[in-house]
Length: 135
Ligand code: TYD
Image 1 (cartoon, rainbow, N blue to C red):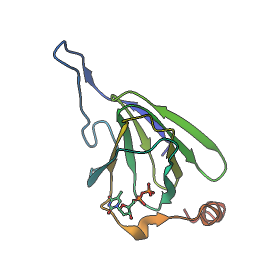
Image 2: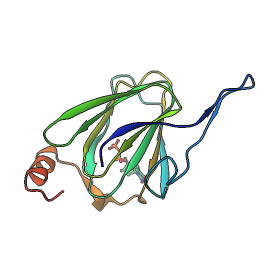
Image 3: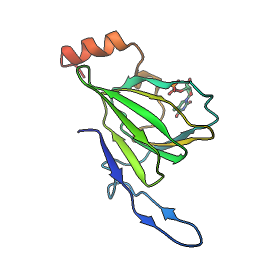
Image 4: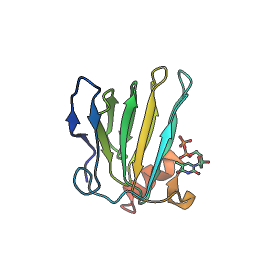
C-alpha cells in the first residue's frame, strides 16, 4: 500500500524500444480505465485531489513531470522522465502533478471507472479524514 516507482519491462531495439504493462503482473490491480494528459501549458498543475478507492499507475510516456503524493503527514515528490517507469499510487493519497515539460504525455492506468463521488477535492477535508482514520 505504499507508493512506489515500478520498473516496467523494456526491449531495447535498433528499430525502436518497446515497453508494456500487464495487470496483476506489474501492477496490483485490474485496469478498468486509461486516460492521458497532454498539451499541458507550462506552469500548470493537474490532479489536486485524492481518491477513496481508485488506484493508479502513472507513466511519463513522453517528456517529464513531477507527481506530489501526500498522506496527510508526509509529502513525497516523484520525478517521472522515462517511459519504462510507472508510479504506483495507492488509494487514499492526496496527489498533484506539476512541472510538465513541453510536449509531455502522462498516461494513467486506473483501477476504477470514472466516478466523481470517488474524489476528495478539498485538502483540509482530506487531512481531517486521514486524522480521523476514515480514509
Ligand atoms: P479531473 O480528474 O478532475 O482532473 P484534474 O484533477 O487534473 O483537474 O478530470 C477533469 C475532468 O475530466 C472532470 O471534470 C471529468 C473528466 N474526466 C472524465 O470524464 N473521465 C475521466 O476518466 C477523467 C480522469 C476525467
